[in-house]
Length: 108
Image 1 (spheres, helix red, strand yellow):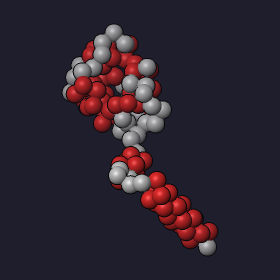
Image 2: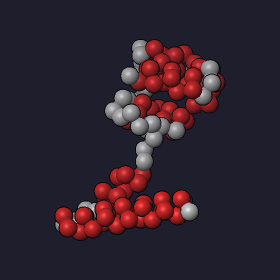
Image 3: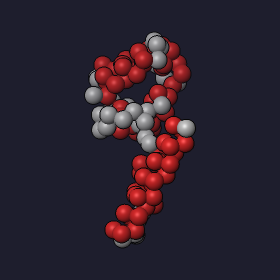
Image 4: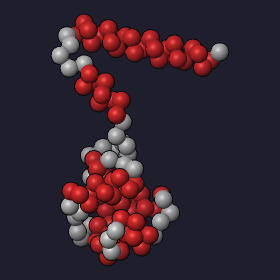
């Protein structure tokens, strides 16, 4: 999965292996090995590649189809920690109201 995603992302950006390797600070051969699947990047390199392409490491590793981490999704659930079911339902209703109100403003 990693090798396919690396090739796909590089091609989406219209870059050569030389250009990507140069920008990331390693050899074209090293990048080619990652793209061929004959070598796996270490943790720091994986994060560097993810940051370069603007995607999550989970996306590179095939753990998700979402290219980017969406902070709102996890923050919403994190902020509900310690609340009971009724309080969580109230929050969800309020969010739906705010979304509805926003949509109404855009239609006018």
